[in-house]
Length: 244
Ligand code: NAP
Image (cartoon, rainbow, N blue to C red):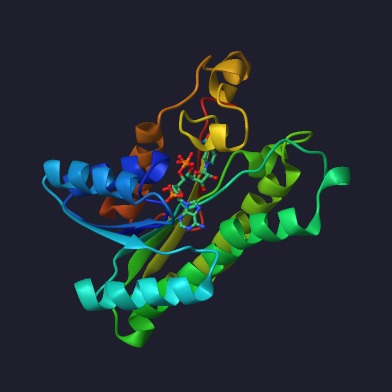
């Protein structure tokens, strides 16, 4: 299982649950090698095989190098989790620069397209491979819109959702299932990176369940979508958002 952004947050929780389920786990990260190493230790403590791979998924040549290294290391890919993603500071659409929009769509959306492209080549039964499963980590923002916060982020996730719908149909007959999870307010460091470290607590009362979720609560759904228990599930979306 290759998890983009597998070093921290939802990706790291997914890596640990994947190890418990018996996967060898490729943990992609961009900058924070120490966090990746700590997640690799947690994977190994859970009895799994961990392999850390640095690559900025905003960069196609990094993606190509990551998949080439994956081929050399494992020779196969069964599950891709497109999880790497970023937010930005609170802003209204009327104030968004082209530079901001380009970063948002490159990191969150174009990276997902490119990683899906490379995964399909390694999974498609039409190409003599064994089939597989792709899980896109979208967001409840894709249906909420994130007005006055980051509509660009919401739109980047909306595009991921449409990719999920279209690609799922393209590759269903090639043994590949494509699904998405849409987390709500999840307690990770992503909110601090957007300048709002207390965002989960501040908005908890607006969630019908009255609390934020944990990264592990999202990872549980990702692992289910990857598993044979989800063998007839493709082109599907699971909201993990406490009713929000
Ligand atoms: P996080 O705690 O900020 O972790 C982000 C991870 O992505 C890190 O491992 C980071 O690696 C990696 N990453 C970021 N940019 C990257 C790039 N260009 N190339 C490769 N890796 C990159 O985030 P999170 O909260 O777990 O979010 C994970 C996913 O869930 C994102 O797609 C996010 O949009 C989505 N999501 C989160 C929430 C939430 O409330 N937390 C809600 C809905 C959806 P480095 O540390 O090396 O930079």
